[in-house]
Length: 94
Image 1 (cartoon, rainbow, N blue to C red):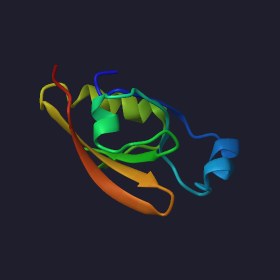
Image 2: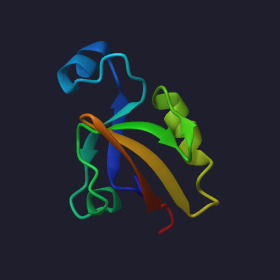
Image 3: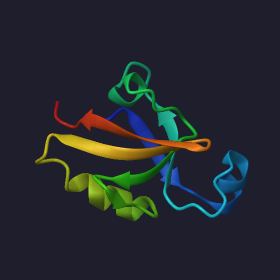
């Protein structure tokens, strides 16, 4: 919520729709306009592969990884958009 995005599990049908067959991660389903994720260029349909360099295969792993970032103040996400992946650093405080 603090990042301005919502995620969901990557189902087989969503993987086909977005071209992520054979991948694991969580799908960005919504991005808050003007939020931290939007300002960093993250878009709905992106796939989050890692949180702080730890792979996340599903929603449960994503949530667990995000809980560990509260004390750090920042989170590093590996985001796949189409065929290209990039790291995005976001502030998680305030």
